[in-house]
Amino acid sequence: MLRRLWLVFAQVVTATLAAIFVVSLVKPEWVPWRPPGTVVEIRETPASQATAPVAAAPGRAISFSDAARKAVVSVVNISATKQVRRRSPLLDDPVLRRFFGERFNIPETQLSLGSGVIVSREGFVLTNSHVVEGVTEIQVTLNDGRTVAGRIVGADPETDLAVVRIQAPGLTPITFGQSDQLKVGDVVLAIGDPFSVGQTVTMGIVSAIGREINAANAFASFIQTDAAINPGNSGGALVDAGGNLVGINTLIYSRSGGYQGIGFAIPVGLARRIMEEIIETGAVTRGWFGVEVANITPELAESLGLAGTRGAIVGGIERGSPADRAGIRLGDVILAVGGREVVDLNATLNAIADVPPGKTVPVRILRRNQELALTVTVGRRKPRAAAEE
Image (tube, rainbow, N blue to C red; front, side, top):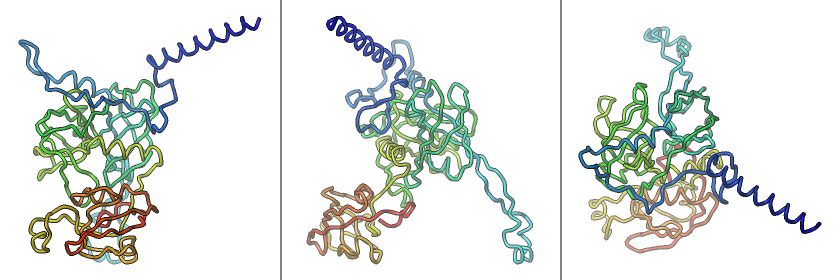
């Protein structure tokens, strides 16, 4: 009797495991667990399978249709409404403006249009912060024409990234690529919904990597591309020749407001880290020293008698800040934070930001060509305080 019960138990367990295995292959979204330490389940191409140059078949021109077909199903259109107040023409009269101030400002509804990328079967969509900033309602249109409501999970204006969540069956997440393996000259495709004409794919090459734009984007080193990016492409996908996500399209340089051959995307390595923190906590927390730092130019190094341009020079210190309490002074050059060597402004800001607030870390500085070791108890950075670190 006992042996018979044991056989029945073994058969039930075997059948259950087999069913779970089949479901995980056919309908993985029905299997709710994920590996320990994983914030959200994503698809990722192995580093060993970096995209090779595309070879044309005999008698056929080179085509990137396979890459486009693989990625477009994961790119969505985002339309969001926001309430703004438009200046009334009556305020052109100085008398009315004096007595009524801004009372004649007219409330109106504006439509914010952009793109997004489905990153998981759970319905998480990665987009730009400026696409969903201050909005009251979000509608997400999928590649198959379905339109569903979206809600903001969180946003990080300092990297211009945001996560929106939707509820819909049959979502196809994009495959994450390896942005750190990109090289100048690699072919890339930009996918989005420019000018609301419908989903569009444009092709170009990587024009530059590690591009730093301005202090407002202190934590991002961008991918520069000549693939056409226009209004509405914001938040869309930049993919490699294999259709793998390597960047999130975010901004352009233009004198006309339209495409002029210089576009920028946030590398997917950075986007993934920000996305996972937003999904896990709803926001991004950064460390803060309370200093203003700048790159060391060859001219500045020569005038200060520095041996090189490595590190970031301190140009301002907030009174009572962690840096002030630790003894950092104006003109000090930060060389390492928490054992992490820094080579320039961007590396310094990111090294500081990556330290959890409240943690005490060693900081190596150069003062009058003499290296010193200090310890700083890191504070919490306020959002959008891009000028201070």
